[in-house]
Image 1 (tube, helix red, strand yellow):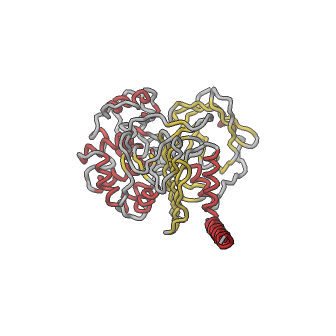
Image 2 (image 1 turned 90 degrees about the vertical axis):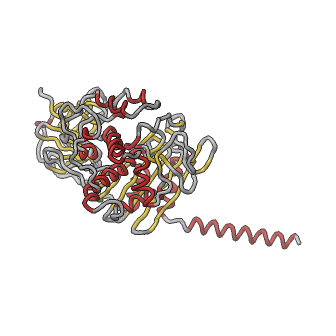
Image 3 (image 1 turned 135 degrees about the vertical axis):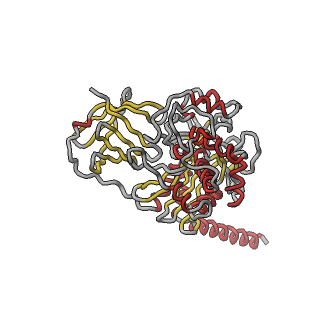
Length: 452
């Protein structure tokens, strides 16, 4: 009898061992790579956890969750966790506005003050300017007084009045600086025109028709199945995210969703199931500034060349969460990554690594310098996101050095592509005609040369 039991146990162990080996061997190289990326970040307390979904040419290459939904309770990530998605919200807001344009309830050329009381000091700012961040209105998240307001409950008009009291950053359509105020205003416009709440309109027009059953306006009090906790990274370990009242992120960043629902959304949007073709093309194709300069931000989405590959995308960041959604139309590839930690390894960190695991990264190649560039040396000053910047530019033998005034760090521009233009990653920097111009996808800055 003992021999039979021993033999049976031995057989069971062998079968289990073979099954485990088969499970490991069935993992694709992509899954193994993603496993190693996430596990390293979890083990080093860079993140609490995350979820990723990779979909290519109608096939799900990877869908997986990692780490913890609750660090305190050691609760692992569920199969389909819900995250706060921050500024990924903006593409839903943009699509909602374009739905109203389709229905002829408003026009992109309408002055936004037709719908909201706001003193523009005589400037005309269109709904289109709000959608593509070219209004010049300051972003409320860059205004210090907002953070005193951010944990409190007040009428939304109090934020409009706060923004109104601050100076414009530039004249409309002369530059592009990422702007949460603009999308906050767009949410108010949606409510004014539809006589519905922002949440109700999105549910009616987008979420319910597409079957996005796990997407909703975030709440600080409502109990939502599979909603994960958010954390902030610190050198001393993960910390609970600070409180933020969801009155304020609103149409700029208050949606919650899952990787599965975001795939439903993105595939529907990019295959003509959300908007008519003219409105879709308007949403994904960036316009131009007053001087004819092309930019990379369209309406709630960026559209640019990511090291040789066309990418239509948007990221998001909010207390405790970082997200990244990207679509490569030429490869029919979707990558969605959501992380429940604000820190160095957010959604874009994992999405970048997965992108270049799947695609051939085409690095920019430098050409010979065609000038000594002594004429562009000097100090350049202008508005960037969150501040005014003063930048010292110097010409050296093999390139250009940059130093922000008051800082010790010196950066070097080495990848010269001709016509007074350098590449820094995917950022395109042109220095000519006493202007320092930077297209960094989400912004287009213009710094002016200071007279000597």
